[in-house]
Image (cartoon, rainbow, N blue to C red):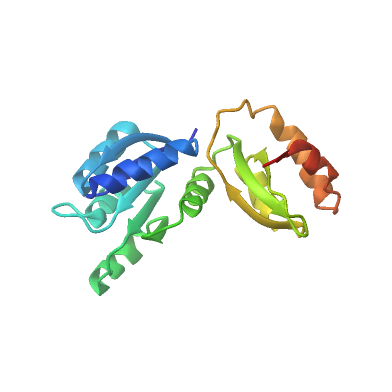
Length: 198
């Protein structure tokens, strides 16, 4: 399971983001309200991903990003900001190179995708999708690599990650890989067998 720390000076954002991420099967192992908290949490907990607000009083996101990069230059730090970034901040960001920058308000599905992509998590998760020319929605379980390929299939109209309902999904991976290989050849019958109608 992917571990993250969430750092933002807005308590409501920290709480709601943490709750949402937990629903999607992401383990929120630490929460903070400023850049100093971020550095201390990173040092103590060694999360897979840091979610970091940029604009915070006293110790801002740039302070935290710089210190975290000193501890681990390869760390995964996603900056989440809603404020206008000044030229000097932009210059510092260019030097410190956060993994990605996401603007508030953001789509939780996009955030979950970013976290899974950056953490290389191989744990399966649940998705909801629709085929072209089919009014029904379906769900199935995939790893992140399978999900990336699944979204590209020409027969898929829409596809999104949905909350984790703690099914035993490990055994499902190999079956779905076979189904994906067949779907790449336009045979979707195996995917339909492995999917549930919503």
